[in-house]
Image (tube, rainbow, N blue to C red; front, side, top):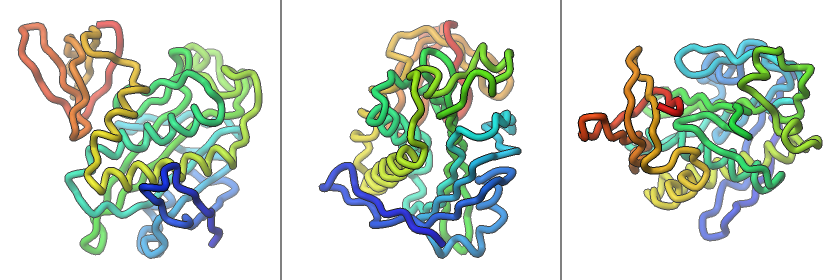
Length: 262
């Protein structure tokens, strides 16, 4: 098994010296690969599964990640979560890790849409899918990240171009995929380590810096087939969305999808 050696972004909060890697030329889904091989892979955490081409990736609520061929980052991490109360913050930690890595390498204006979309210029460049598993009395999290990096316009269908983009399209240059994967790995283990140490304010401050929605923004929120209009108030320290409803009341949501404007 390959190994990727890591350096912490902050010496006060060290990350593991290395992460184990399974590097697949192609696969249906890196999340699916981990789930199907959890018994053999769970002893190798932290673990990173990468592939050059993903043919059957998926997003939240069973949505399909449309394959575009080479040029993307298709990766999944397997980590052990010691404190189950932190599971709601995983999407924030993962999103912030991706945003920090992209910002560091490209200086692009990256935005996050709660809870798991990665956007550039108002278009989706990637997404995160987290699946939590109870295995041998331990909680394991599979964190899947799909990111359009060196994907050109020819690889995106006309319909997708209306809503999607890539780092290379926006920046006008190719990005080193291996270097970006390394940076994402370092930031992910950094922020999840901070999360386990209960330093929630550090994650929230960084996440809110990249979050596209600001307090008072009018939004539409879709949850369990229902559309709710209101004002964005905050993301709390459990990773949940707090929304002011039309009647002046507040409601907290742990899942759903934001669209804007309301």
